[in-house]
Length: 507
Image 1 (cartoon, rainbow, N blue to C red):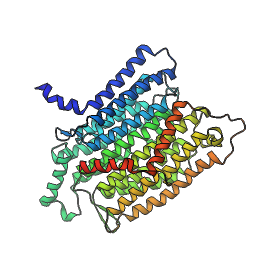
Image 2 (image 1 turned 30 degrees about the vertical axis):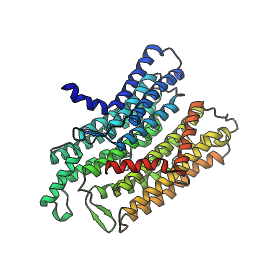
Image 3 (image 1 turned 180 degrees about the horizontal axis):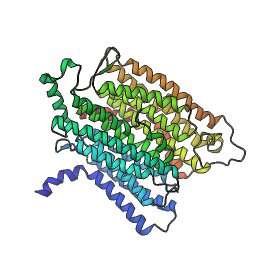
Image 4 (image 1 turned 135 degrees about the horizontal axis):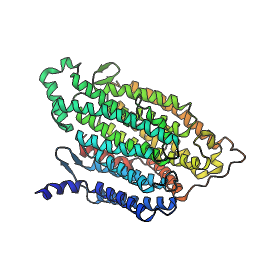
């Protein structure tokens, strides 16, 4: 009976099992056979084994797709979860690709193990609709990222960033767990669907006074959930960890935090609010604001767009500039959640995946420059086009995509997202948010062009040598740039799969 009970669960979790096995194999190989080898060789072998494990998990998801709902949402499998899990695995492989030439740590097996364990946490996170599994998966991801941030023992900035990340992360986890406990007390269930049913029953029972007041427990749960996930997605005013972590963490760790974790966090944040808090949306329309999670998110989105873009202007560090850019982009992505329609969800997924590709590529270029020059200061990018023309052109593509310039993926992502937000309100009540987003996008173009001005216009110092980038890192960066261009010129290559998956999931 026990074997029969666990057989469906093992089938559903087989991709995660494959990745865990690859992680353990990497650690065993590194400890038993590779300790005496050079760091680059160890990184190459570990990355190859880990990438093979991720590729095996992708093949399992593609060739033997499961559709199931195990134990009332504890583990969910459908085309949408599979699509997001494949995206996460691809981002992990690309992160491993840009980390092969790293020398920041001697603990190579541990680094790759933690990267894969974080990936497993993300895969479980996007494949569940149960509060307990969501929280455990989120903490598995977070604890792995804290250690990845601190893995450069020779850097005081890395240790300081990890400590700040851990402290803010612990605080956000406390808020999130408190909100989840209120939801359980309110609904007597940890299933998102049953929580939504309890909210509907409460409203239909007449306790929702005049449609303008929320149950106090539910209101507090909304606020604490927004605070908890606002930290995870680096939205203002819960962003204080992001600049220090982006600047202090080892480059591959920072790239992974800025890309893969964002995809998983935004996906499950949308699920919790739209599925779990169904019936408590409220309205953020300019003329008729109604209490609920929508107006709370609208305020956070507006603050993120304003603070992220305005503070990014004065940054002199490439990493910190990308951090404040990430805060601004979190504001844009929150607009899709404010709209909370199928179309806006598809736009969110397209946006966050293409954003992750561009950000991962930008971090790859920054890592190469930083390793050659010893710093990520923008002054080190002066004349980069003459020292590393291929990397410079790739950085040109990444930054213009983040700015939303056609025909790159970032342009279509913003256009589609803004259009879905406007379509969600027949009276154009959310127009104020879209206007603010467009205005802040124009501001972002200024600081992205400032970086490109240094790359293509400024002259390098006389004693600066040409930048020699590793072949594999350069290949990964070029592939990322090609993907950004391709998904901008032919967005249907990704969008058709997203739209079909969202339709089947019924969100």
